[in-house]
Length: 221
Length: 263
Image (cartoon, rainbow over all chains, first blue to last red):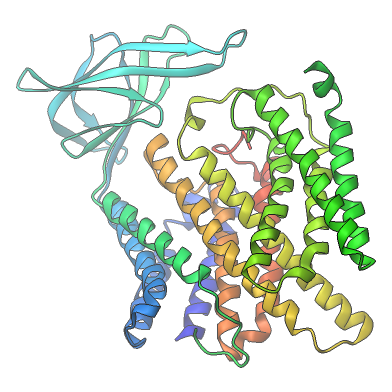
């Protein structure tokens, strides 16, 4: 099982290498959405599950279980997001004039949000003696049936969350500061992937910080 | 302050000379002067790092020069930690020599580059993400140096009893791996907060994942008896990928990374 896992993982690394080498500019988008790559990732997740089931449970192996199960959970969350995520990047006026309740998704479809949003109070602060922004932010207001339901500060690294949708401040109109660029997404796999990340991290620190000598003749520690 | 800024390259040369002198004393089996020079080199390195922090007004991780100075700083504390964990006293020479390498690299980068933190970098993830990667890179460099010396001794002197190299390199990679994992995954969590996507298939991200994957293959090859013979190949490939992730992706225009253009 360990040998098969190494072979599958090596194949995935080869795919990554093909996507990373600058052979042609669209390589990543073609390679990483290739069905074969997705199948390899699924097979790896399946093999990790089988590997975990084959090992007798013991609290001493908590790190082993956490890294492997965490990896499977991340893959599950990422696949869920890949197939079910709805997202859109768009420009919107930042002077309270433009309100929107419908998004044109990146896949060409449009979707009704079930609430309306408007962006206002945009501010940008520059570094002294330089035209480089130190910080920019705006307010985003969510309304349901015309009544303001929620208002949040929107800035880089600080997205707004409302009714399953997350809104990110990506950029702004650097000429007239008339509009900002937002990214909106509804990702059903997000919490799964994030939970997997924390489980994997916990396992990696537990597993690798426990003193273990190199086995003289092989065998799983 | 102008005096310090004007003489930064002199401090860099002083720190790396002290590290190299310490290394030479370790090679001559004179540990006490080796320790003194290693510590003095580290203190000058710490002075450069502190000055960088004062000049930039923020944690100094804004350019290759900043990051290389910080990388040089990581080796000495890691050596102390490893010595306390077990019998790694004989590895002092590796740590002293490895500390000089990033400072040599730093000499070739522009030290006067003004750095202003763009909004995406103003995150709580910034310092832990960079620090964990530098810790893992420092440890991986030591493990790779040990493996290189092992092969040199096998080829040059036909020595066979070199298990301590394998054992200590294994322990060091095991210690590096969780930090590399933290660096990779904290980057994903940060990207999710900043751009809404925890993974964008950016060249730096892909190379970081390749590096992580190759170290994972190395660790698994070590555990499977039939695959033990391939573990050294995996180690060499993993370190080559690490150098690509850390240095080549930033320096070669065709491999350049849009999301990591600042470091």
